Image 1 (cartoon, rainbow, N blue to C red):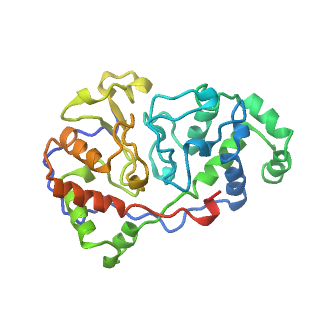
Image 2: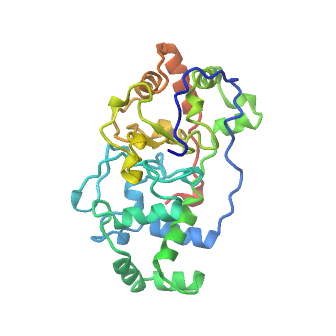
Image 3: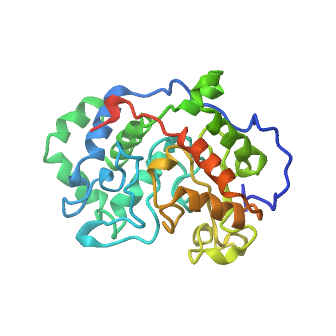
Length: 302
C-alpha cells in the first residue's frame, strides 16, 4: 500500500523537527471564482430537497466540521464516518478518510451525489441552477456556463481560501514568543514520542495513510482504504487527519469515538506508538495542539 506507515516505534527525532513546515503565506486563488464557490458552498439548493449545504457538515467558523460523531444528510439520514474538517484541506495529499478523491474538485462531487448526504444528480443540479441567478454568475466566469465541472471548480476555488494560520506557524517562522513554555514542552514531546512520524508536513497530517492501531488493529470496525483498493494490506488504513484546528473538531477519529482531546492523545500513544504517556505529558501535548488553532479569513466566512 502506497504511503502506509510501517512499524516505527522507536525513531530518534530532533524535537525541532524539519518534518513540520508553516502554512504558505499565499496560495494562488481566482477571487471571482472563489466568491462564486462560496455562494455555492452555503447554498442548500445543491441538495435534492433543498435542506443540506456543504456548510451543514462543515461549519467554517467552528473548526470546519460539524462536531457530530456522524453527519446528517437529507431526510435525516446519517452517514457512517465522522465529517473531517474542510479547513486547510487543500494541503491533504488525498481527500476523504479512505483517500478515494484525488483533489478538492473530486471531493466536492462526493457529497452532492451521495444518497445519504445531498442525494442529488448533476443533471438535476445544473438544471436547477440554470433557472436561478447562477446563470448570469457562471456566464461571466465560464465560457460554457453552468456545468458539473464548473460547479466543482468554483467550490474547490473557494476551499483554497480556507487556510488558517496559527501561533505555531509564527513559531516555525522564528517567533519564539508565539508559543507558551507549556506549548513548547508539548511540541518537544510531540516530536520525541513519535507523533510527528504520522502528523508531519504543512498540515501536520494529510500526507499518508496509516493503519488505525498499528500495535493493536482491533480498534476499528471500519475497513477504510480497503473499501477502495480491496487490498488486504489496506484493511483499517485511513488517511492521517490534519491536526490543524484539532481543538475545535471533536469528536475525534474516523468514527467519532471520543469527545476528549486528552483521550484521543492517550489512545494514539497506546495503539499507534505502543507506549504509555503520563497524564502530564498528555496535557502538555494537548497544550501544543491548541497552538494549531488558526483563523479563517473574513472573506471566507459566511
